[in-house]
Image 1: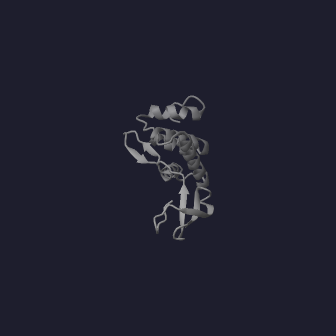
Image 2 (image 1 turned 60 degrees about the horizontal axis):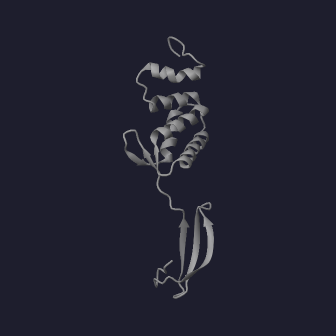
Image 3 (image 1 turned 90 degrees about the vertical axis):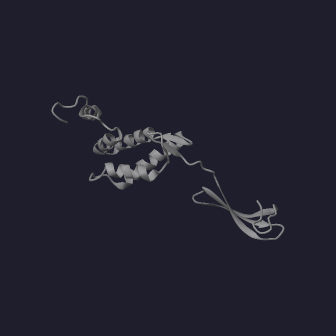
Length: 157
């Protein structure tokens, strides 16, 4: 590490501490030429995760978008925000486990639907109806069949 004052590469570490829940190491250093003390931070270099949308557009991954979509699907339902935050965290963790640089939006949508299916069936159907872009009532009924125990009832569900 070069001293910010004299630019020499001759220092020693005086103190090291973990910060940010162990994600960062803070080091106090002392230049052995000019005796200036300075602080450096060491963290893992993260490549930003990008989402590949259906159109091919690539955007930065944003956990808050997942959470806001889940909140919207659960509007006026008795679902605690804590449950949605846990679900969003679970989706994010699965994405980071399986993908390094890019993740298809279809994968994210499927993970969100899996979480919502476990939380509330109405929220699941709301999210699925927007995410899957149903073109007709039959597609919608096909999605509901497993939830209704097999066959959708004739004349409405």
